[in-house]
Image 1: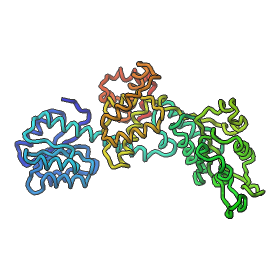
Image 2: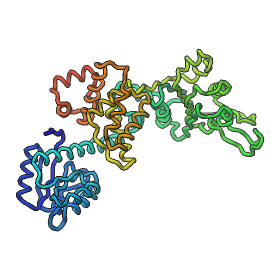
Image 3: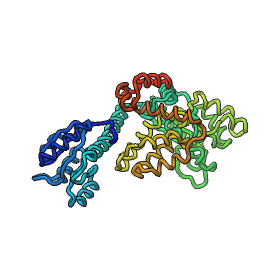
Amino acid sequence: MVDYQYKGPVLFVDDELHIRLSAKQTLELAGFDVVCLETAEDALKQIQQGWPGIVISDIKMPNMDGLAFMEAAHKIDRNLPIILITGHGDVTMAVQAMRDGAYDFIEKPFPSELLSDVAGRAMEKLSLLRENRALREKLKSQSGVSSNFLGKSHPMEYLRNLIANISDTDTDVLVVGETGTGKEMVARCLHDNSSRCNGHFVAVNCGAMPDSIFESELFGFEPGAFPGTTNRRIGKIEYSSGGTLFLDEIEALPMSMQVKLLRVLQERSIERLGSNTVIPLNLRIVAASKANLLDEVEKGNFREDLYYRLSVVVIETPPLRDWREDIPVLFQHFVEEAAQRMSRDANEIKQGQLQALMQHNWPGNVRELKNAAERYVLSGGQNPLTMRLSSTSSDEQNLPEKVEAFEKGLIMQALEKSNGCIKDAMEILGIPRKTLSDKLKKYEIDRADFT
């Protein structure tokens, strides 16, 4: 029999005394705290939102039966795991009850091991739900940079600190990193945590805009500037004055526009097309590139003077493979987020699946991880996700490096679950205090970060 970690209270509801006594003995021997009740009405009095236990109830009972009880209990807490006990003739009814929200059902007569095992699995589901609730509350309580960039790894800590230090300045910033590493999130975070937060955040994807409309889109124009134009248009640059202009994929900016953008950076003013009026600007520019701009300068594709104007501060968003230890917490967050959005269950991730996540190379970085979490939720947590990830595991790490990354991730996940309590983390990981202490030193993990 599997020894499940979380063992909260159990309400066992049955109108027959001998069944209550037998079940109580079985569950208490398995380590559960059991309260036996004769009626569903008495059980409802014990349940409240967020109650930290599960319910096992017979279906056939006088007055309120098990199905009506389940419906009433789920109105109090829709996530409460309820296991139904049914006679042989009621299996069809029990299957329908599972579709209506029951966790599982047990058919009479049942062996004691089955009762303990089903109760244990229900407790594990409840444990995950409680962790997800705690994570949601933690995210709600966080503000600023911490709410946007999750993780305890050194790359994430460094990124958060750098953003926090420069957010409330007017310094232009260049954000560099691979696709999917959150460059636009960095730009938005810089804007949201600055004194410019009440101004506009204007995002321009330089790689998606046709060359023919670049100038008019960025600078705007006056009536009559082009044949057939009768209205004035405020360009993206002017519209962002007082706020932040984000130029994504800046490496794709045509050379002719690079000259004009350089002048904007130098003069902090523009002229609309068809006008001689100089319009002063109060803006901050954040540019982003997935290419090495200095290499583009060497190739003659990017102006050197523009590069140095943009790169007053350079922020590098690290690829996910460089902070694998945060993958468990990040993936769980994305799973919970997707499950809530899609009204699906946030299935518990198994160790084999977690190992596949940790070993995958993540060429699409955080964006790919988020997509994987959505597929995981849509598939009900089944094996196709794990198989897909395993088939593209990283070749860039040797076996010891993969093992260390996986082990570090498990330790950080255990500390996250236990809120930094060493004793609880030891129990979750199944290792002695000395071993855990040695590994905390080895991986430079500070338990205080998790309290």
